[in-house]
Length: 211
Length: 353
Image 1 (spheres, rainbow over the protein chains, first blue to last red):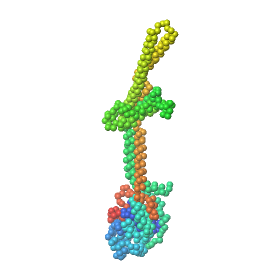
Image 2 (cartoon, rainbow over the protein chains, first blue to last red):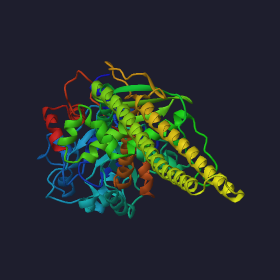
Image 3 (cartoon, chains in turn cyan, red):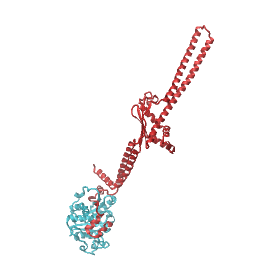
Image 4 (tube, chains in turn red, orange):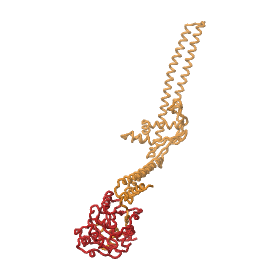
């Protein structure tokens, strides 16, 4: 197995579960920085794109540390923030990709605008409709709550990423408590060493897409 | 197994996995040190043994029933001698005498705490019965020659002390008999003098009363002489017994002299104890560390811990990626960025994560 296969297969489990539940728009956040949220968002996007063979959009909505935009060398390129500030057209700021890869919307000029419920609702309801699946990389809840909560009410599901053996429980509880006001969060446990136990898939009923 | 117990076990196992290298290091340290000490004890312990055959029981060594002194305690001859030796070993002067005749004497003299040295020597002695009439005296030391010296010295000092004690007892008896003989001799002389005095003052023919008195005096003289003769015999026998004791030793015969052992012996048991204690201590320490770390752990240790975050539920787990051997070190994020964005700046992904 090549390292490419290995890295993409790492997220097959998560991607399969998202696919099985029929979720169309999901977000990834965490309690703290450094939990691997952006990596999971990127990996899951790649795996889902391969599984669903649909158009998939990966959005870098991390106003605190837009690492995906840096990976794509689009830190200074116009993106989501410019669109929310009505300074750019969405079609021009989305970076398209081959069918097996996700399209990418970088964060753009973060000083131009901040995500609001109304603007994001319009984005998800109208502008990203051509994409069957939308994945959003969000900043940590603790410290970035106002960047996360608007998305929480709009996305089909928000996943809180915790790192096994590292995320302090009190902080995890605090972050989940903040999110619980807007949605019922589910947890993705990152960097596990044991095989996955029977998870809460049966409890997660497919939700009607808000797109 | 209850779910709560299962969850606790999972957390414990997760903690053990998390600190596995530290636990392995501690186990290696404790077990290694213990096993090395055990090997050192086994390889550097030499035991010298003497097997002794005891011929007859000594009445003076008979034990008494503490509840009823009139009821004798039945003991084998070997048990008597074992008890005697064990009692002698409790005496500091005995152990000091034993050590003083060996190559360890200089160490004892130079030691600031001779009690410690004597206690150590005492603990290394082992005296046990092999049967009703046979016992064994052994000593373990780090030098084979010292072990032999100790056993020989202990038996020699024991013999001296027992002989001295008997000689003292016999001498006391002799003195008693001598005193009684002197008294009896004076009584006999007095009786003789009274008879002579009567004969001098009462010439024949004697009256009936005088004859009766004379007979009485003669009888008293005869009794005194008989007693004198008896006491003389006893005193003579006591002197002979003393001489016999000085030459005796047949009742306590060493049938197997202690030999110089060239190979380690006698250290297997203490070595095994050391090893078992080290293994048990290391294991207990590791378990204790796991328990304490689990109790103090305040982070998400595994999927089981997500239950503590209710009402949030676990949706999926993303496994830790292990880089295959032989391939260049390339982190997960860099690889993903290359696949997704396919540009050279993906190499900076690790810094930004």
